[in-house]
Image (cartoon, rainbow, N blue to C red; front, side, top):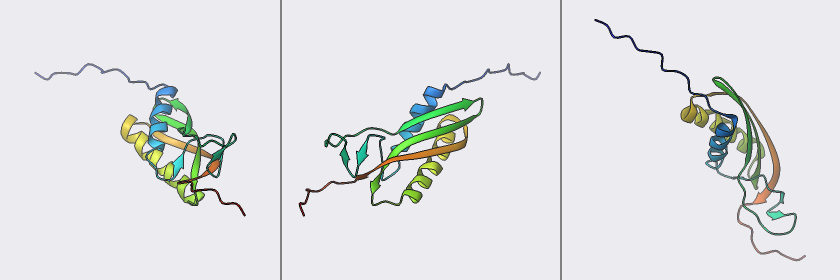
Length: 122
């Protein structure tokens, strides 16, 4: 006698859940910071601020599209860093959620100094 398995059902991930997973995955990439309003390590009010990247996701059954806003440590290559983020997000989201990431749009909102030193007066 052969046992037949009943259908197991479906697991659905919300856009918000995927956004949180993707935001955490972005932090795993070197030279990437948050989407604060920074300009070379300073926020608009002059105080350094730590924030995570901002990710919005659109999930459709087995696929996801992402839009990421982040900052990059100066003097890292913007092109190389964004490509690393894109590749990492595609791989990690598939590993963690099983989703196929079809698109990753990245907006670099600022550059920041990785380790700001003392200010010099010229």
